[in-house]
Every structure is written in C-alpha cells, then in structure tokens.
Length: 82
Image (cartoon, rainbow, N blue to C red):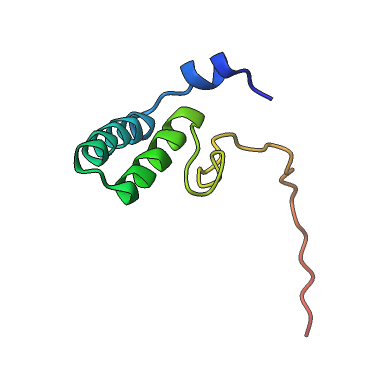
C-alpha cells in the first residue's frame, strides 16, 4: 500500500494534470452556480487526480511497458503428412 505522500507527489502525467485542472474549474463553477451535479462531477475528477486512478481503476487501461522475455524461441521441426 502506498503512503499518502507517495500517492500525491509521484507519477504526475498530462492526464493527471488535466483531471486536476478540470476538477478545479468545474468545482469553482459548481460553487458559483450552486449546482450539485457539477459538484459531483468535480469531486469525481479531483478524486481521480489525487489518487491517480482512471475509470478502469488503478492504471487498469494502460498497456504494460515491460516485455516478458520468458518465451523461448526454438526451431520447430515440421513433418509433412500426405
């Protein structure tokens, strides 16, 4: 389990900054307009920015960057069947 300090200050990307900016802007508008639905949307974006999660969970939609080298490539012999 990550500590709060590690969760808040590591792994910042463009999408995480975008979520933070959108959540802040929508939150300010929700307060000015007294709109609870916009407040929920802002809370959702801010939660995603703070915890570094997306809609699929903690990095659930990302493609893994490491390549597994466990698979061995051996010569395959074929037998012709008539």
